[in-house]
Image (tube, rainbow, N blue to C red; front, side):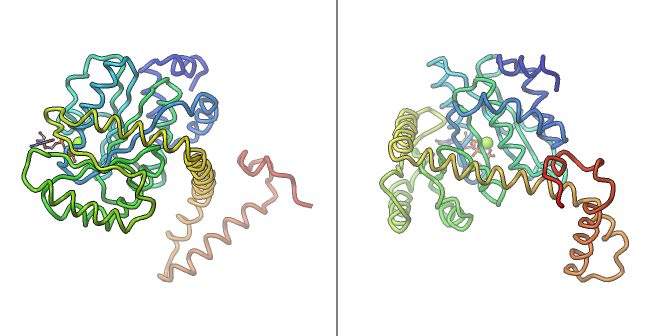
Amino acid sequence: MEQQQIDALLRGSERSLGKAISIVEDRAPAHRGLMKQIHPHTGKAQVIGITGSPGAGKSSLVNQLVKHWRKAEEKVAVIAVDPTSPFSGGALLGDRIRMHDHDADKGVFIRSMGTRGSLGGLSEACQDTVRLLDAGGYDRIIVETVGVGQSELDIMKTADTVALVLYPSGGDIIQAFKAGIMEIADLFIINKADLPGVTQLRAELEDLLHISSAPEHRAVVETISTSGEGTMDVITALKAHHDYLVKSGEKHERRRRQLESDVWRRVTERLKEEAAPFVAEVIKKADEEDPYELAEAAVAKYEEERKGVNVEKRSSFTRERPTPR
Ligand SMILES: Nc1nc2c(ncn2[C@@H]2O[C@H](COP(=O)(O)OP(=O)(O)OP(=O)(O)O)[C@@H](O)[C@H]2O)c(=O)[nH]1
Ligand SMILES: [Mg+2]
């Protein structure tokens, strides 16, 4: 991406932002330079992950939160992650997110994101997109996911605060528990509080939270997201959790952990990319099906290449390392 466009992104241009997001979604090599350049401009936004089973009312809640923050003239961005969809770039916006209220609002940026390609992961693209939005000056960044798989869990782990939206219908909690989301959620939102079964759900939830670690900073709130009832309680709980993160040093701790996993994923992504041709080669020639041997063969080919005479042709990743004697 040209410097001019990066500057525009940093000034808040939605067009440049959109282009940059496409680059990180494609996981093309160009995304690395881009991320490096915007990095010094990140770290200001509050990132809120909202998850929960399909139809729990996540988007309705997001809609209410956006309304609230826009009244306070804060810039808000929403990323709707749908891992089951091979499409991205807005295909789902029409029907899945009920955000028409904000269509013409310049202070709101909405993007949907689905699985793309096989090498670049969805959670990586999502994390980078959060950073781009942060650099673009968005104060609140909301990431909405349907809580089912590992990539959603990874995405949620990168948020400052994770809210789990439940509703009185049964089975919901168990599902979240199995998926490991209960463990990482900071805020539990019982939505559809206008429907019967709220008392029972709250009791079940509090029962479960008892056995989890550090329950003191975990709040349970009730909402009716269609009408907006309870939105202020969510706002208050989000603020309380953020204060807790700062005061306890947990925010710093989380950012460090995130830094570590970020470095890891970049290293992994890079190595994977470099090894891909050798894996492809080995698979193509495979006449037996022992995955261990095939893996060994791919690694051997990869190492052979790295030791090769053509040092100059190596990627910048290896070139920056001191030459072995
Ligand atoms: N009765 C009631 N219905 C609600 C409430 N909140 C949301 N709904 C309805 O529940 C349905 C699903 O709401 P969404 O906000 O789209 O839920 P979601 O979790 O974003 O759904 P997906 O993105 O499809 O997973 C819609 O028909 C909403 O009108 C609520 O508090 N009470
Ligand atoms: Mg939704």
